[in-house]
Amino acid sequence: MLTHITRRTGCGTSLDYLLGIPEFAAMFSNIAMPIWRYETGYNLRGELALLWGVLQAATRYKGLLLFTGRGRFKPEVLAVFLLSFLPCRWRPTIVFCGEAWEPNSGWRAVVDRMIVRFADRAISRYALLSSDEQRLFPIIWGIDPNKVRFVPYMYTLTEEERAKPVERGTYIFAGGNSFRDYGPLVEAARALPEYQFVCATRKLDGYPNLPSNVRAGQAPSNVFPELLRSASVVVVPLRMGTKRASGQQTYLNAMALGKLVIVNDAPGVRDYVRHRENGLIVTGSPDSYVEALRWAFDPANALEVERIIAQARDDALQRFNPTQHALMLVAMMQDALAGETPYPSSPYRVNEVNSDAS
Image (tube, rainbow, N blue to C red; front, side, top):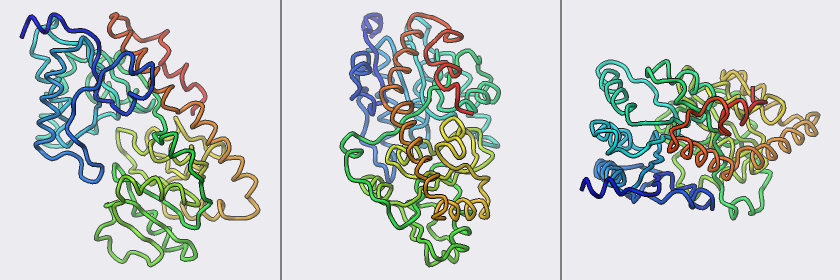
């Protein structure tokens, strides 16, 4: 086994959604992973299989690009925690990409910090999806700030999905489960009975006294993009006070489809959405959603809405596309393999990649 480890070549990744980018596929091979379901995620057996897959990949590849947040127990992080006990020469170069880890409380916080403390010894770079996370992550977890970079995320629609006709629909759409807060939006819907709301989420299961103009429920992965495509406006109601960003996939996909996006001012949002330029940013209160939606549907603002939509589509397609995201990760892995410090001249540095996002 040790002989096999010393002969590691190439790089492996669990970010299989980027393997369609030629430059990315030229550098990375797919780590075998168990089947993941959008509706349910992994079960315990699947998470153990992923953990084992990462450990096996560590014996084959000289570099690993892994996802930060997959699974309830974060098997990729646990695998690196185990690898951290090996001598440095037996470990691959490891880069993590994705959302920052939201801190737990109580005994789980103690366990999490222990795992991160040891795993960090084996991690060369962290590619996080917002400048807020880039700033907070080292403080929260005690990690060297020079290892943490902001790599903007991307829309995830396929070319086929983007080529389909887009409707200017009749309902307001909100979707997603991760770090969402639908309560204020539901109360806004109660104050706007003339509009129909479709919420593709399980977060509203059992919500008391749901208004009659709100239809809610978990949508299958193949239905979610179609609901997005047929919406009139897309609202992304995010939890406030978190230490990580979320929702980028939903609002970037909406922007790429030419939808007006309304997002509350949660961590990471202002790296992608600029108020009244390519979207609307609200405080997240029911009144703020009501005000934004009334403004969006006011015929007097139609030209302004179209200008915002056009700018949003251009930003998504030009700045937040899969190729840009993939190339930044390739550059990061190349620098990590070479043992170079990413700051200050690397192509994925926040001030160069996203200097006008404020």
